[in-house]
Length: 126
Figure 1 (cartoon, rainbow, N blue to C red):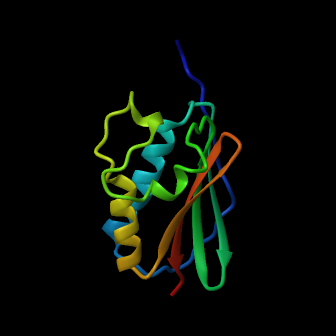
Figure 2: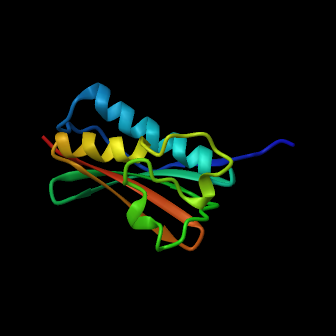
């Protein structure tokens, strides 16, 4: 069966951010792969915002089956939610992302609203 994913990218502009180029790509790639791997394939969106001298890169996807109780654990090493049973993975992706973001003086966090999960990477502006 053919899955049609609605993929939306919000408005963005050019700016300089602190961080290592390769590691920043690694974080963004991991967040996007998770949206594809663990979502229901219906909607994925990328949004950019600016807050307190930072650029927020947020990836949202529908089909989240994690509970609010699971949310604090998504950045733990080797932790995998019940929704990960059918998907291959080590449980290290978001843990590594958090380590990399902290090394670049940034942050990463997740939020669930209904069946939508949003993972946001926070990059400091130059």
